Length: 486
Image (cartoon, rainbow, N blue to C red; front, side, top):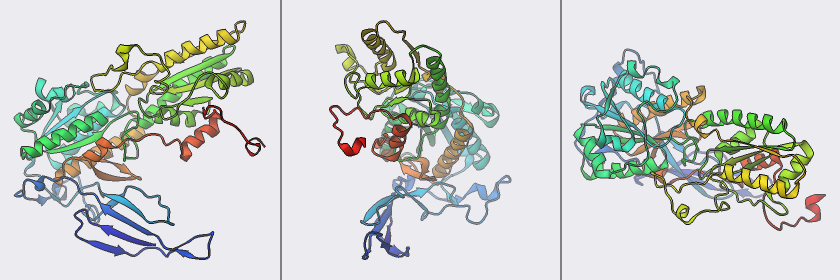
């Protein structure tokens, strides 16, 4: 197998020594494949501000830091987006520059640096940790003393005065859920936001939010570049649903899965303690079912998991009701987990609800949990009018997303914040820092804003869910041949 690496500016293509040719176990012939990858170029302040000067990284003289050999990241250090390849055919992968400190920075003077931090959208475990680590990292690592929090999301740039932050003020923030800066949806007025950034003299902007927030950050970046302002913009993707693409996972996701276990356990106890009991749990997941999937795999108490990526139906052969009836008959109870975005096309909507949007521009979802509870009761009363039946419905949404981050997510938030700071100090702009295949990298903001991390129902994770629950695949009129049932 041959490997080639192409610089992002396409000036050079160089072969790199690699392992011996791949030999197929099914053939005596030798199959030679080519694996190539090219580094994705990040936007940089010098793209339009040619006269910016670099200086030695202040970490070199930081009394609390002792950079060792190999500490600084070079521009040739990259992280492959895809690490799984079929060696029998040629393949190409993007490569992102590795996150971390550079030995030369575009930090003029710490005294002239004014950093702004804003949180947008809904709550997520770890928000306060990210804010805290941004403040402490800027203060302790790079000597920045003018750090401000922008309240109430994007609208805070033009509707209120920023709050000055320091390590003493934010010291215990990581122990609390929510965001101390307050947040909101909507309020995106591009000209007013960039005017506010410019009027307050901010030259570093750290934007924490979900996919909609990241799309807004792309527009802010474009306007800043149009005005040729010396301002770096970086995004820190936040979504408890884990639906941001490219990065391995979003911060707060593991905490959400852990807390979802409590709701599932409670539903299991309620269902098991009733005659013909069903425990119904609705978990977060507007368009992706990652929390429901991982919570199902972790709990081992779930009989059926419904996510937005799969269609299902209620009645008839192979439907949800038939499956649950069988489980209740066998075990005396059943536990059903449903992501909030699942089954939306099955729920009757009024005309006004068809086009209804929230402040972020997302379609307003109907309560699939409440609808399923009602439909389950009507179905049982119709099919088994003389038998007892109980449905216990638990919606832990706000209990999950409002809690502090667990230890794993706290560590993750620290690494995200410090990676973002190092990138901004190196003059990069319009990027997102995050883990890609376990290594922290810088990804163009525009790519992250467009990418979506949906559950692939054809890969092993969904197969594992099916093996745990033994639920149907909800394919109508499926016919089984002799080999399928033997």
